Image (cartoon, rainbow, N blue to C red):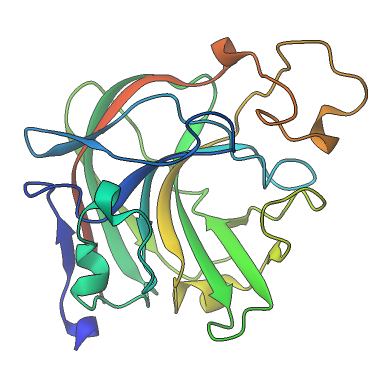
Length: 240
């Protein structure tokens, strides 16, 4: 049933399952409620630092907008009713079109806003939790509203596996999987991420900073991190 209908969240009746996620485990870390302003979901710092995919993984991340796509709820008092899960929408996003209407006032500090698809592969007994970003199709945040559509083709040339930092990662089975396997069942979440943070310690650190966990084991220079705010007015998934 679910594959025949398209998903559309307009935030006119709350966050609909979407969250802002303050990465890391410092004070205030974890899920955070998005502010809804005139039917748009506002996300702003602090976003923390997701160090799980730092070197030798692909990059450090921040997680402004997160939607859990699996059956489990987390912090419903913050996310509201998850209309994606309750509506029975398909997690098979192969060749879907993912459209956002977005604006903001951001200092990106060299980062890109990318779509991340996360899936346990295989679903019932995951050997790996794969995080794939659509590196070939970044989303541009401008002061005026814009509508942008991403095409989720299972083309390995368009996607980048985030990999894992290895020891010290929050999930021991973060890794890579074929993009066709991830897209056919995005069973963990979809996230709009700020990709490629410039991580510089705010205090002297001995040795390789990437062996430590940025934001948890040492404070970072926050002037090098993205700042500003974003407003997400609509998210739409059109299934093929």
